[in-house]
Image (cartoon, rainbow, N blue to C red; front, side, top):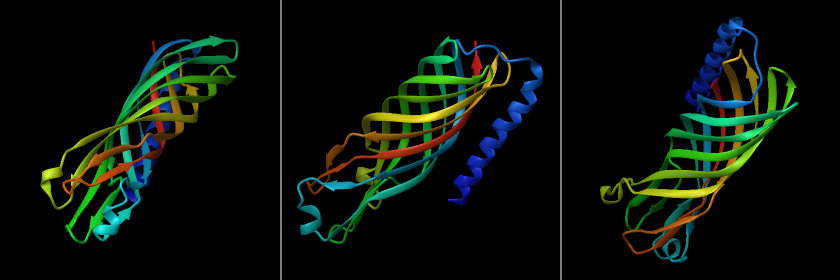
Length: 225
């Protein structure tokens, strides 16, 4: 956990340093137009593992575990803004690679095996609606559709390693963005996401499901074209 906090703090320091070094290049312009940039941050996931048919934990002395994972995410975003006075609105797409801990699992005494899922990638397509505090600073809300891909591992049975599962859901959050100059801005954002359940059948022909939720905070820099 300390590693994730340290890495996130380092990302924020880099963004702050970029803001200081670029601010001297000129005054900021408006928010309208296309932009693209890079971001990094911290993502926490949680999920309940669902025994769909209700037989596995009862028949096989299995411990059904809800998972909480701590992850780092690295990726980028691109979007387009329109500005009408102090109102700024538009859309944004992003994609992140994720590295971290297991999402969920179960342990079976009878079959002597455990299942884990690790988040591999996330992506979203969202609307953004913001208000400028002054010409250089904007606070905004954002929301839209999100996807999540996991990679599963039967921790002591390689037969099941590497299976990918795709989840579809929604995401919403708040953020703040500061124009550094006419070309660059720095942003900080927090988002909550929920995904619909997926189900699968394991080697013992038992049905399971999972319904992940994530909370992410990220910092980044955008280039405005």
